[in-house]
Each structure stands twice: as C-alpha cells, then as structure tokens.
Length: 122
Image (cartoon, rainbow, N blue to C red):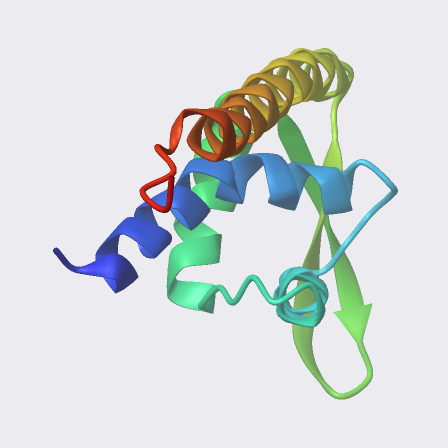
C-alpha cells in the first residue's frame, strides 16, 4: 500500500477548507496563500491553487479585485463573499464534527487495543 498516496488524498480532502480559512481573514494574493500553507506544512502548487480559486469564485464563494503593482502586472486579490462566509461556517461545523469523530474513534481504537490485547505472559 502506498502511504504517500493516502497522505496526499487526506490533504486534498481538507485543502479547500484550509484555503478558505486563510481568505476569511481578509483580502489575499494567491502567492500569500501558498506561503501560509507552506508555513503550516501543507504545500500547494499555484497550478493547483488557481483552478480552485476560480471554481470558488464561479460558485459565488469568493470575489476578487485587481490591484495595480509597481513591480509588474496588476495583481488579483481574493476575498470571501457573504455567501462564502456562510459556506465557510458550514464547512467549519463539518470539520469540527469530523475531527471530533476521528479523534473519538482513534482514541477508542488505542484504548481497545490496550485493553483487549491478550497477555501471553500469564
């Protein structure tokens, strides 16, 4: 079994929620998202990020505005819409429920292993 593939799939499952968690704090440039994700040890390529941002914008979750730059072309800054904030709050509830369930199951599994493991030294 390929552990790296499983780890990658787990990260992909929370990618959108993590990106929205960054954007909900205010207007953000995509390279800033990449840096914040990297700092949290969740690496994302711009080739993955831009299509996701476009999909979220098309769904009404995000909007953007162009800002002139002194050092090159204008930059597109993304921010959350009112619909996006409601969407994020639902995702946050789902995440809390999921994280709680996973924690309960993994702790239960550890406790069961400790109490159900036969003692062969008796």
